[in-house]
Length: 532
Ligand code: PEP
Ligand code: MG
Image (cartoon, rainbow, N blue to C red; front, side, top):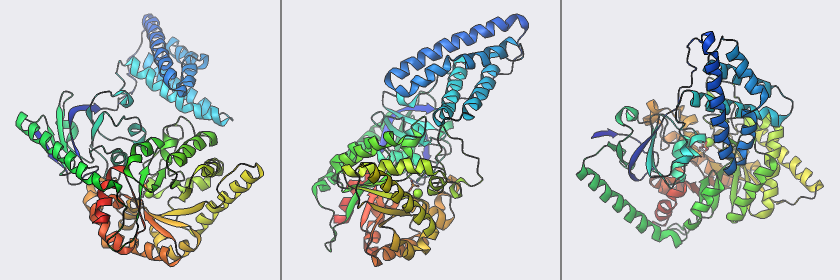
């Protein structure tokens, strides 16, 4: 048995299951020369690979229409010709020919005028990966295909990986990289999956047939435990379940403090699926809808119609309140179909509202979709990462422009829609008073606020012990924000991870926080702490 201890917990709970090691395949093309008489074999190999990949894609496209374009591109003359001509020249083996040709064809797509066609370059790259994995005979690991209980162990998991996982079967997550507020941790918490991140020795400790017990409350991982220890953990798991049952009893109660203040208790989500999952928790709404997952799961920038359908579904599912945050991409979140320039400091870089304001057409489509959905429930708009009043004004202007368009088109929307902002940058704290005059509400994003106030990267495990949302400077910032908001009668919420931490509840209540929004898995605990 091997034991690993971790200082901080990403998402609490106990899991016992066999390991599923998620490895990123090395697709560097092999570098062997091809003699003239073997060119035919290489061509044949490509033919076989192409047939297999197309068959695989056809199967995928039955379940998901996104793959229809992949099928067409994989068999397309330009692509096939670009590969076979390179093999025929005798200068490239099949793997080198695929890698080169795919890059060339992807570039062709990137140069096209039509936006839809430009976005197909991501499909081309995906097909290239499929060709190469088949050539190298590597079994592709498909996280969406997991259909029995496992604990996923990986170097790191990107949001685009986590969105594919079925929480019914993924019982736990352990990653070598990442901090407790990295997005894999947030996703895990949203689904109530126990998770530990930044676990340095995990990949060396497990073998494909290993069994894992993880206690993501105390931060302990046991690999291949003996029978008695396994039994002990199963017992603890039962106790944990019993505790959850006990806490559940609070569900029907209103979150009212000892001095009679009714607190709003909301959830953070990245999809409508997560709302459905949490509807039985007696929540007051969605305090944060992270729309970036909608962009990341797609093969192209989601259109106004596609977004409208999702936001409308959210509004209908949760009529009390749905706070939709406009796109917060950049930082650790990228898009499979859009090439971001490499940045030295992505968390200080082209991110969130900066991108939206720089890409007005994309921003407009999102705002129109949100506004249109506001006719079906109680939707609020929220902007991320603001540092200046100018940004807030520009973003609000864009909302007004979209409203005008919709009025002209006689498309209904909520004329009174509230437009608020995340408070997650030091500049927003310092200017909190000014912002309070112009924003309809505040929501404190402690994940970023902590990293920016303390200058501690939220995903860097080496300095994870310095990442502390209870630091007096962060606490003071929170208090400043709440006071500024209240001075102008604004409701102040919090949607950073601190809002779901039971140890923070009494301090936040004392400061006057009005709304707590958190991963669904924490709602019962926080409600019981508020009621006391
Ligand atoms: C935050 O920064 O606290 C927040 C809620 O936003 P995100 O974690 O998506 O950056
Ligand atoms: Mg943030």
